[in-house]
Length: 177
Image 1 (cartoon, rainbow, N blue to C red):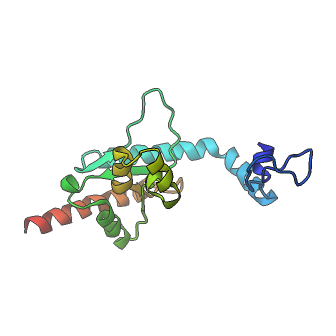
Image 2: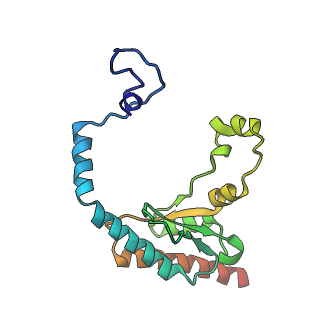
């Protein structure tokens, strides 16, 4: 690990690099912040779990949104809340929903695009015969990450959920008019 974090340099032989490494060394300030966060980690994770529960509870009946399904045996570390937006059922696609939320001051992000579509990996995917990865592509094209941070209040989550519902309803009204 020391070699990997220190550019791959052999600790016994200065400026000799037997492996490809990285510059993953922390500054003292970064280490101090990490220590402070670790002391609060249980509370931070508990709050994030509560935020996930609130989103799932409040968006459960919203047509066209699919939530992550956790395996019963897994203990999930809730880094973010993501939903998959089905245009036909919700009335808007992921990008249109993100734009509607942005208009209300709510920042979202698209779910990560699949690696095989990224320029550095396209050739590798082609060499390995990977033309399509349908599930990864579906998630990458229609997944939306919602605001998730431990300082969010229950009211903040409610505001986001209400804005999502309003975006879906307004599109349905325009479509039926």
